Image (cartoon, rainbow, N blue to C red; front, top):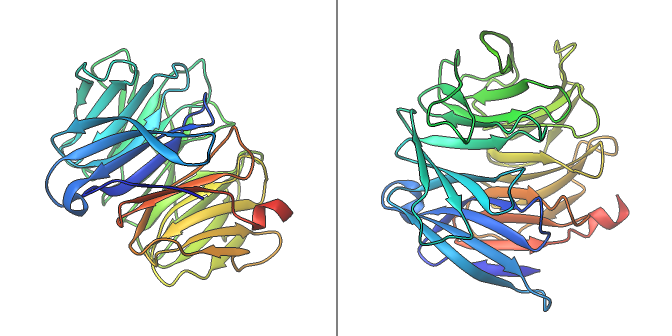
Length: 315
């Protein structure tokens, strides 16, 4: 396992590059994101199996998420507590980022469309809106209002063009047409705040949600009267979930119970592996799409880990 310490910065998000299997970025905040600034770390896995810092980038407010461009390997976008988005050119660390300012409160989630011809990204905010952006324009293309409480996560469908999902503290999942902000499909998925959602990479109608109730639920968007699976085991809120890029039924999760877990909903309702290498809330999670079986996580203990869970060798 490769580990990196981000001194006096608490981890919120970690993302592998979609172009280079050894590069990743980590969004962090001072003072657990309550006050102070933020630092974006560009890290690299070495041939010796360690993590080293390539560069870091400073912002005046805490950074809560970061996402790579799907078309340019040197561009990333971060989201901060002051409602701003920052487009960084990693090859020019001395240049100020391009800023996007429309949200009224903290921006908590970013996603870049995997459909390359679109070149669009989403931002989800505590102002209860989701915004659709073109990185070459200063103003958002569309604003999506409808959630009654803060929006924690918004993610594009990897299979269905112009479709994305959002989840909120109001307990609902909404499915949106990116070109029609007024008519989302809405259904209640948890009797609690919904903190994360993710689409299956192989089944276009399958989406999973996680909540502050400690449940992970899978839904068929064609028939959402009841979940098609429900996973339980975390003793606290599940902050983030992600489907494996290499398997239909495998997911990973991170939780406020300090754990990272691997699940296979076709095998068991319980986690197939529990990894406990953090001493604080675990916030960030990502699969390496270029290296099978590799995961990164980060947490409020200022640690970033890159590792290969043993259960994935069997799965």
